[in-house]
Amino acid sequence: MVLLLSTCKKKEIYPSIPSIEYKDATFYMASDGTDSLMVLTFSFKDGDGDIGLNQQDTNPPFQAARDKYNFPTNPYYHNLHIDYYELIDNKYQQIIKDLDPDATPPVFDTLRYQYRIENITPDGRHKAIRGDIEVKIFPSPHFDAKDTVKYEFFIYDRALNKSNRASSPPIVWKRQP
Image (cartoon, rainbow, N blue to C red):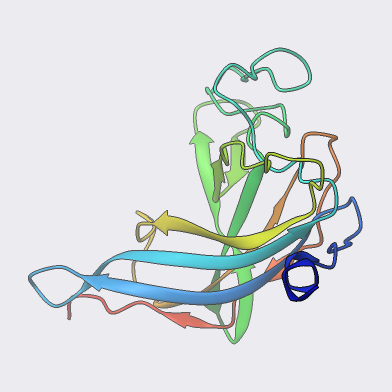
């Protein structure tokens, strides 16, 4: 009787649309004392466990479509999207990159990070899943006088459900003086 009770596990139930939440930012220092890498950690929950893609998931809707500037145009190829903001004049603003200053009109894009989370669907009958995802982020090449930033991010599952948008608190990178 005791063995039977100890093996009964309550099934976790979550919505099939993934939910995410900021957890932590850990910095790793270069030999000069400046931050050279940040690991952004966020938690996730998903009721049907369809988080992540396999390497062979490159057919529609996960194909790698790109524009003439080699930027991805299909939001589902990358299932993790991270937008980068800098504190400018006491307001967080997305950074705009000049892609083609010679074009008429000029072509601009916002600075963002895009990744493919690998398939982490659990084996077994119950697919509900929760856990943490860690993402390595290097300082933006657009870092100049700005050192306080924040990141907003979301994920897609394989059913193309978009999670909520989560946000980091203000993050201060240590830069070389």
